Image (tube, rainbow, N blue to C red; front, side, top):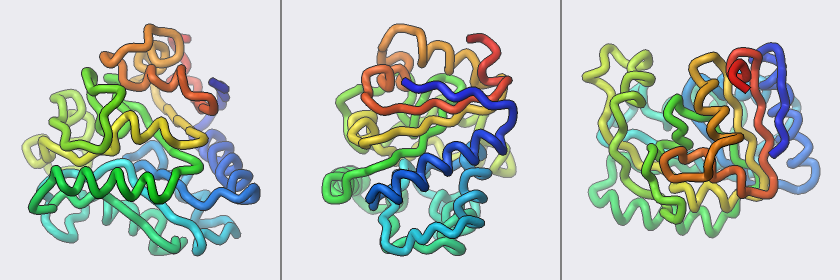
Length: 233
């Protein structure tokens, strides 16, 4: 892994964008995208850039199960508001958390990933080490699946909802095996709350109890850390 230490989220996001821009200049056509607060400044960099994404494909990591159509908390709406409305892509794919047959949706999403190999995958990391919504104990060999969210993940995401009870308890998430197919991975971690997970990801045992630790085995990972997320290293 390549570790990049920065003194601000803004600088870290600029560096992440520079990696994406360089990849597009070298022919990358498919981006794997994440949601939540971590990539917000990265998406701002992308919106304000001169890079043309209209010939590219985007596949998102995950989506909540069961949110109403058009819900502001859905990741489909998040991506529209923070990137796609300003910087259109040729194609964008997000798991359908309202599919009548969620298992079939998972199979179909893995087929999309195979049809559109991801050149650059953006990741955050949860305080418990999850990537995507692959919680501790998730299989390293699993593809896209329906996952049950842990209490710590629900607690972390409740700030986007009126209350914790409004946070969905399940999501459709790209699996760890799907994530590590990406040719290049950029993991961004900001804030002291991520420090313990970052330390275990980088230097701990590679174990399904710490899903992000699988990245130690990937040939091309850049980890961007700010001063707070780096505090225990």
